Figure (cartoon, rainbow, N blue to C red):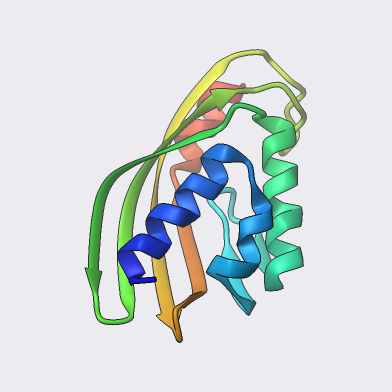
Amino acid sequence: MENKELIRAYYDMWNDQDFTKAETLLDPDVRFRGSLDITANGIEGFKEYAQMLLHAFPNLYHAVEIMVQENNLAAVYVTYTGTHKGPVFDYEPTGRRICYSGASFFQFKNGKITSINVLGDLNSLHKQLS
């Protein structure tokens, strides 16, 4: 799979909430930092982060706005939307719709994603949750 295809499949995995695809897309030792500034290592750590995030926002959607890819690196600008239905940070569920942005930086090796570093607009998210 080409790197851009890996990225599209990665966001499809999130939007479909089908993390059985993680083994196909991610390196077993993937380094991950999510939009909530939480880090995880390995596929199981990534899946735990995903489940925590989806518990807070069960209908979370990742809309890819811009994708730039060169060699083994890529940058993606994403808009996240969802409904706050579970606890996150120190906020109890509000039932509010949220919308915040993030920039994801990917590294690839041997047809897999080896690193994902997401910088989320946490200031905007906190304002919407409080």
